[in-house]
Image (cartoon, rainbow, N blue to C red; front, side):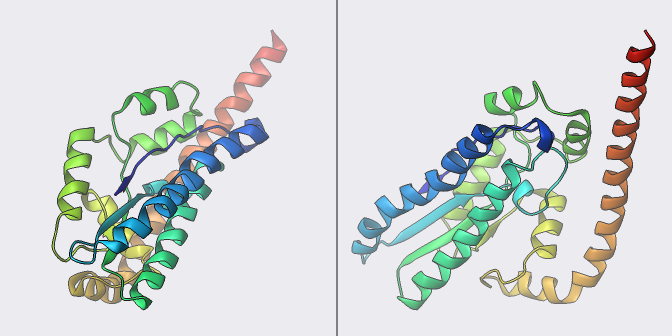
Length: 221
């Protein structure tokens, strides 16, 4: 079962309406929980098959950044839902596995719409991670879901791997390799992340300063 519907409205917090928050919570978070609620009982009845449920978070569900104060929380919520459900199913000895995908920016029609009103700071930070083609992202998710012993996290590229290790927290451990990396490299990865944060801070401050200059110039005119 693949849960991949989602929408993002990237704006400064002060420019977001209450309906912007509601619509993203309803689609991004509740949309996934309702679908799982509907399908899970039938999947568990197939004792000889079971299956995998793939929930789609985002790299913005691992680290909150400028412009995503409505979107990121819904994707963080998907992670919390996945962790809770994974623990419950394990306790019930269910034959259904929970998987959590963290796709990067993907070249889709929805992404094009998202970019139309995206704040400059948000755009610059997003572009630093590059953009992926949907067939590459889709194939990776399907490939991971079809494995006989699927992992909990599905990440993309070196940035995705680093974020997955760095934000592993209390994630279920489904790979010895990932567990070793998390324990051994957490300190180093945290150190590296500080440089990312410094760069993001520089970008957001420069954009803020530029906006102030533009406002001052318009007042003078």
